[in-house]
Length: 179
Ligand code: HEC
Ligand code: HEC
Ligand code: HEC
Ligand code: HEC
Ligand code: HEC
Image (cartoon, rainbow, N blue to C red):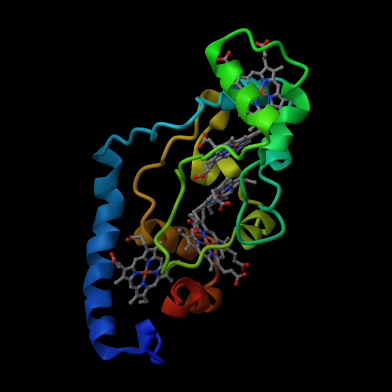
């Protein structure tokens, strides 16, 4: 059962929220010192190599410019190229086994916010932000690496930097980012 009172309108939540806000803003700085290691993926997909041969981010992450989620490529997309590629090592054999059976590859999420956070790619891409701003330089990565310190303070400080004081009223409203 979900309560009918939105989370951010409960007074206890507001008080806790104000405290948490302070802690989180501190955390944005603290986060820089933590080392974050990418989770193990079913296949060590090399971003660097594929971007190097000319594959665009939008070719595999088709939703970023038009909606909330960027999305991950289906196995068909890999297989489109890989069915013509000789599976001459273990990683290529793995791709071929998923591809020939048409099975989805169970990728482990890397860039992920808690369920109670609303994020949408579209407005950020429309505001001319690059993928690299938030996800790091994928041309240097194999699998995607989690980025440090991407907490509430991170969102809010960029919103403040990139908006007028009037727009910041909306862009810092709890309901803009919390359901
Ligand atoms: C635009 C064509 C293209 C697409 C799309 C593509 N690949 Fe590749 N991929 C290649 C080529 C070319 C190679 C190099 C093969 C070689 O070394 O013989 C490669 C190499 C690889 C390798 C081997 C790295 C190594 O260890 O040698 C892996 C793993 C891989 N791709 C996974 C994937 C997965 C998973 C997808 C889908 C998400 C995908 N690829 C989509 C063209 C593509
Ligand atoms: C303003 C920061 C920002 C920018 C710019 C951005 N992203 Fe994201 N991206 C995020 C956040 C935050 C998440 C986690 C969203 C969630 O869990 O709700 C995410 C999630 C993702 C995911 C995983 C799941 C999904 O579909 O949402 C992919 C893939 C992704 N981004 C690709 C991209 C690509 C490609 C670009 C450039 C076209 C891009 N992002 C630009 C912040 C950003
Ligand atoms: C050939 C397809 C392909 C291309 C091109 C590609 N990606 Fe990916 N991307 C993937 C696959 C497959 C995964 C899942 C494995 C992983 O996390 O590395 C992924 C994962 C990601 C994630 C983490 C998603 C999550 O689930 O949390 C981000 C962020 C991302 N890519 C950004 C980019 C950006 C930015 C570019 C362009 C510079 C790009 N990708 C180009 C296939 C691709
Ligand atoms: C620009 C987007 C944004 C706005 C505006 C925003 N938040 Fe958040 N908030 C987040 C993100 C992202 C997280 C999750 C990451 C983290 O824990 O820092 C979060 C986490 C939280 C948490 C932590 C919950 C937990 O379980 O750790 C609380 C509490 C919270 N927000 C309250 C608020 C309150 C109260 C407001 C209004 C004053 C607010 N937020 C405004 C983005 C936002
Ligand atoms: C690097 C800067 C930057 C970061 C980081 C960032 N944002 Fe934003 N965000 C923007 C800009 C710019 C806009 C667009 C403002 C506009 O359209 O006027 C925006 C707009 C939004 C909107 C409004 C969408 C709409 O169209 O109504 C939401 C929701 C949002 N951001 C959530 C988040 C959350 C959640 C995070 C952190 C997980 C985050 N943003 C991180 C720059 C950023």
